[in-house]
Image (cartoon, rainbow, N blue to C red; front, side):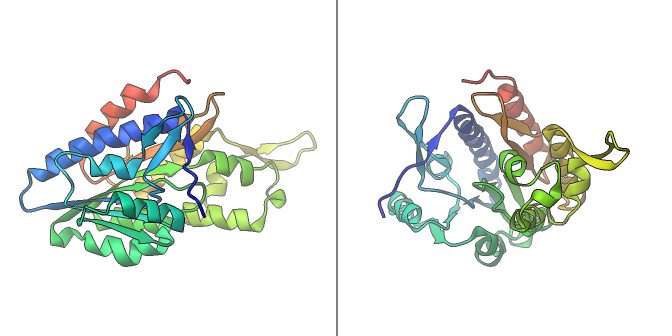
Length: 276
């Protein structure tokens, strides 16, 4: 099957710029720590490049961005489940012996093949991008990264998928498969308490009124801190489409205060930019 490159909008390009800016600073800082070995992990890596909807030109995806960071990471792990995208990734990484391309479901590959190579006790540190196409990520991955103490994450919180398929006025209308996906992403069913506010309707019945996206994102922020045990989780930045609708929130979570300070600065730089 021929590879069809993903088309990305303005805010996806902003996200890639954010990743680029932080990865540069992260690698600069960690490269000075002679006892540490820092790695880059991309769980939904894609083909390595995209097509910009704004210009129609090719733009570097997160794998190409990471490979061009100076000073370089000591190792790279790129994961995707799509065979055609993996083939393209392997071409990009052909001359980089420190870059490893893995095909499979990142929910298992990360836990069995990648995270064990980034242990705190082995003086390893990792920057991990978790940018799923929708509700395709399991909480176990997020929680494991937090408890390891050695991994920082950028995380896509896909509110568009959640709004379309899960957050309905009546949960009885939601497919059981979509509720299961939501449970796996959130980690349990406590998302229902975060997403719905009990309200009396005209008939005196208690119904659930859906909360604002930002309110739910704040609840997930607390979950990253209190359950996944990330020490620093700054306010996420909303990524929106050309109509101003939230597509997802971009989270950062870390055990390092310096990392939080850098990300806050970068997020604030882009937070109030106009949509194109």
